[in-house]
Amino acid sequence: MEMPQRVKIVEVGPRDGLQNESVQVPVGVKVELVERLASAGLPAVEAGSFVAPKWVPQMAASDDVFRRLSRRSGTSYPALVPNLKGMEAAIAADVQEIAVFVSASEGFSRKNLGCSRAESLSRLRDVFDLAIAQGIEVRGYISCIAGCPFDGDVPPAEVEAMASELIAMGCYELSLGDTIGVGTATQIRSIIGRVAADLPRERIAMHFHDTYGQGVANVLASLQEGISVFDSSVAGLGGCPYAPGATGNVATEDVLYLLHGLGISTGVDLAAVAETGAWISSTLGRQNMSRAGRALLARQQAGG
Image 1 (cartoon, rainbow, N blue to C red):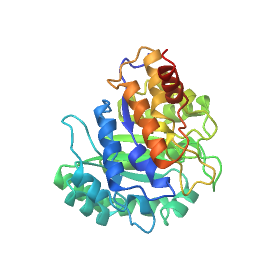
Image 2: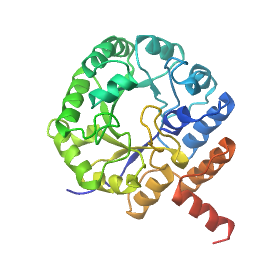
Image 3: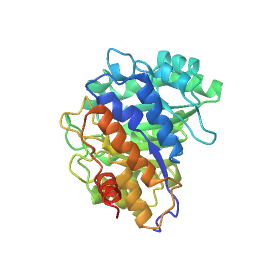
């Protein structure tokens, strides 16, 4: 199968990344991060999450973030929405695209969402009804596609089953997430093949965490399966509060370096993303987890 000539990057750092920070991040920093990433040419920047603050305190001010954003024409700013209350808050903040999430594993669903997989789907029906009525696009996340911290191995058939449910409910695209970062290239290709038996590859995105250092390898494996949409996080921000040991998402800079090296077009300024990764890492007082980002900036500082 031919690799795509152009790839879309969905930047999830301002949501999936910042939600795991231990210190409260000021709204102004969140807004600047989103705007810098959008200015670098990223076509989709996930800007927040309308979840209960007691569960994800870092996302408590997402409504303020959306109200203060200077939105660029042609850029989408999705928000994660868990339920009808969150959907109503997103509409009030003029969110134009939402993401919903379910788990491929029963154990993770019960730990993360506090309900079974079947119940999680049922809870989303009102969200889809309201989104459709408002003309708001819905993207779906499926977590734990390659393994679960509670259930262990997750059969590809379980991923396929949840994918079919979300597509039937109205998702325009599904992001398949290796939440704990255990997947390997052959395993990822097998999962894609299983889901793609029912769904065009054009409607499948991949979302990798880099716990075992396999994120970039899994992006390459997905490209070889014809996938052309990937989630990533500037500076490798992220983790998962409900997945012990999971590290951040695969870094946007590392994915861009791979793609550009393959001659694949993204429309994104890698240097600008690398600078943003260094800035947000410094602002948060954390290590920049992007190897490509650190190397590019070191070369730049050395005059290379």
